[in-house]
Image 1: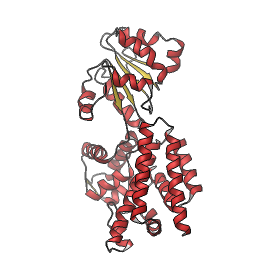
Image 2 (image 1 turned 90 degrees about the vertical axis):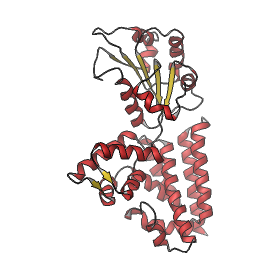
Image 3 (image 1 turned 180 degrees about the vertical axis):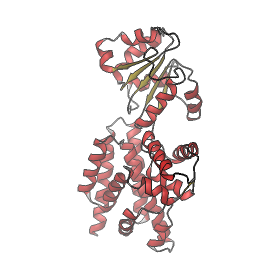
Image 4 (image 1 turned 45 degrees about the vertical axis):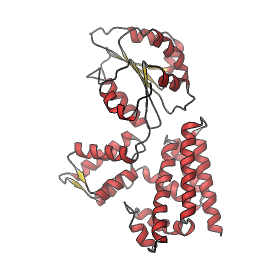
Length: 341
């Protein structure tokens, strides 16, 4: 059963199916939603009598264990939670067998990473009425602003618009990392209750998001060696290819906004200063040089390329890291060609 976006929040408070597949590239959001669903049954997520964790190696060794654990009763009474970690398509068969005759009252929570539309496990979750599919993609746009506002409000903080935009531009790749950075910001604020742009930059200016700035800078300057090295490092650290593509989209969108302002008669300095949030001092000088090589029409083409790359990651079933790498290579080659002309 596919969950409509407007149903997710109410579903997390009261799941109405016996099993849920929580999957996607944002591992922090996957964990957050796993915990929220488990807490609809358990007050204590460390309760060994009512919470069972299974892994794929366990189920491979004993395929019947899934249904046995779901059917088991708690020694202390109360409904149980059965969690399957790092699930793969190999779980689709045993899960389908149990769903045909769902014995037991346990809430079954299945955690997986990024699954393509061709995934047998994902297909089962999207079509089986007793199993819900809950995808977890990186926060962006309105959803990221909502997470930022909610977290700040929980800390008793408000933020200036420029500060919110700065935070949105530098967070969002992973829900747990986003919340961790906002917790750090709240600690930094002390007794002050209004977050300024300077406050936001002081706390988040050196986060992993700036590594993505390094990738965007190298790609838009045509530095293929650096772009590949940074890309390899970020992928090795577990950053989602879709997150990297969206980081590149943010950079090229801001470049396009600045280029449009220049075409309307503003100086490059004025165009960059007019961006919200304005570029970090670490990259503003380099963006000036990039604007000389990337006119508006080429930036529009670059944005189309990145949009198609994101769609390919989600729909084609091809390896997302390779799609991301191809997009980075195309951008660096375009920038290098413009630098030679």
